[in-house]
Length: 250
Image (cartoon, rainbow, N blue to C red; front, side, top):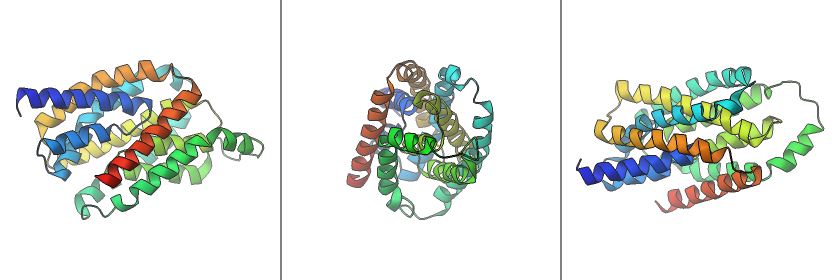
């Protein structure tokens, strides 16, 4: 990797780290960059996931104030994140390319729609009794499925995760975004460990992504928590729809 290529990947990692903390879909910045530099798709995806782990940690740390009082909630969903991340990583390494990606655009569109109507649905759901403080087994299962997707490819997993949490939990979008950052960070971490053990990691590329993603994660946390809920929701939907266009055309 030349110095210019390294700088390009660092810049892509910075953009991805920033986007991931605010909403998700940062993979749609780094993954195409690695492909453009000649890395095979699976190697690019594996290296990208490993590289984004430090940025995910930085982003979650940046949102630590919004995590106050949510320890039980985060721990409950952590098991789903770990299991789903491992399962998704193994699916990527074991299934034919494209076997899972055929449903990805539809999932992202659904996630965008859920985020867009979340305030209205939250008001409707607030009128009904909630037997489970953290959404119950159905929500846990949806978090698990989102984590499987995140371990497999990961683009817009933040959009889907935030949609699930926003519909199930009666809380502010900023606090739910903090939980989302922890969950996506866990998914990236455990799937990254799987890739390091049994996958083919391009370490120069992963290192460049990591360097940019850490800086981007810190910047994203600073910017994201200052966005009003309506603006944050608009960013979520916009990034998600752009992700659909990129994936369908790509």
